[in-house]
Image 1 (cartoon, rainbow, N blue to C red):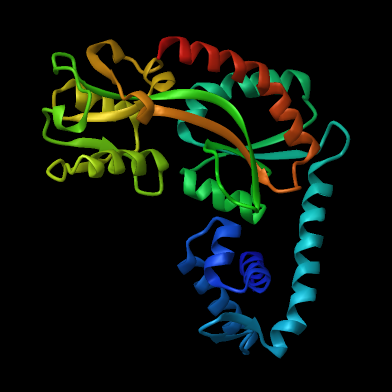
Image 2: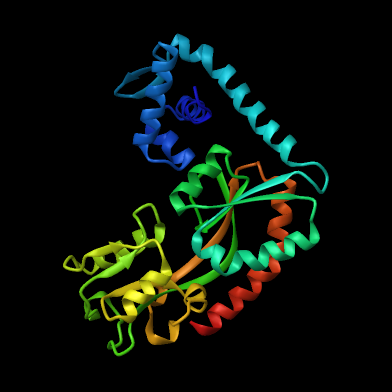
Length: 296
């Protein structure tokens, strides 16, 4: 029995459907279904009665619901107790790789000076994984692209950036996907929202002949683009940090490239240490917001 299974069970019980639980937990319905099936198999009984109108609790499900909610509440309060002790405790932070490149060093450096007694655990994942880990309570807070639409989660703007298309230096201006004159594109794997946006950008223009090669490194992407092999999407703030960025041409994508990075946490579960992190980053985020949009 796992906490993620109990969260899925409680969400289905509250919403009356797999799709409703998926929206609350910001997960795909298939993931909710698997967790319910695993929990029923582990307990050896059916927890829901299924019909065309939806799902209702069985007798065993009703017995489990109150107990499961108490377990989740106790787990959440225990995490907060162990992580918070005045200006001590621990803060578990998740972030996109692009956030770790530019924004996070300045944020963490300032935070450490102010709150040296708080232990930090910093993890990087793709956006979809970050959202799941915040919803599960594995992370206290995350920095990911947003905003995320979920009743189970809350968010606040950290900073604004711009997604650029980069090509070889002598490539003609690109205003739409059909202007691309290259053999391939480079992007992260499909659980990255930036990759999803790039795929959608191509699909809306009905561009299907350009293969997308998955590369988990902006440095490698830049090297391939510089060699004239293809094009890639890169955040402006990240591009400026890459050695050799002056050897590629960047193209603004306009509103398509507008990118918001948000702090993300579970609804009603913003810990004091996480609040301190947001407060520390607010001045830095406002400065980046102004600087980014002065260049767009």
